[in-house]
Length: 373
Image: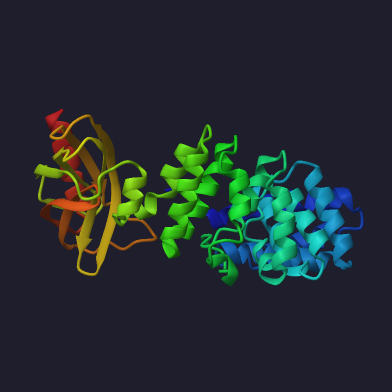
């Protein structure tokens, strides 16, 4: 089993941070900071651990914020930080620098190559809207890809794990940033730009599509990939204008011979299906599938095919995993599988999700598998 992310805020990460601060400020109470940072860390979740270490750092830096920020930047300049040792520093900046915009934003700029400042910049955008955004415009033109990404990622309307900033939810204020970055040479930056527009599309689909159409008309080496990644949410919902933006004919096409390897699948197993889709017109076929149960419908990518003529047919095979994950509960019971062609449900088949087999049944299944070999 993978190590929980929270466990990466640990004695090692605290030691790296303590060593870096002691190297740039000999008066830093390294032992006391380490003791306080590690005390009570165990029961805390990820963000709680970050805040706990950040608070211990603040107690160990009894200095005016601008001086503390200088030391944090000097620590970053040593190049020894990583995400886990640096994250408490960005949190410290978010909490304690709000009265010192220039010093705090310069500190986030120094930290973000090691531990991204996308969460820490949110309070500054909330409190210092125009001045913070002006600084981020400068970041968007930086030679450092980490800073360019921070300009886009930190200002995303729906940045995961981050608090909402009300004015960022409306289209417009961040578009000059995105215009600068839409064809960035770094894929790291471009994916953030696409995610930013995908966020925008959730609340303002028409505005997002207008931006993407303008970018496509303007051309660029990488714009096409940005456009495709940015419309993924709209494609999942079958938005006709998003489909048309990709050249697909909304609602066109059909599906037949949708078959399942088995009409039952256990939690932890996979549902494998095969389907043949037929084009209703020349052009792209944007293919999705949905898994439905009472009160839930989740849409997934199946593929994309290009038809040279009406009637062109393609057969696809897909396995969908029902492996348990901590962020989603999949109770046993009846399900339906939909195949979606250019935004329209073209075929449906029922199946049943059953409880995961117990250890004895799993052992028997493994023995049967070995016998077949």
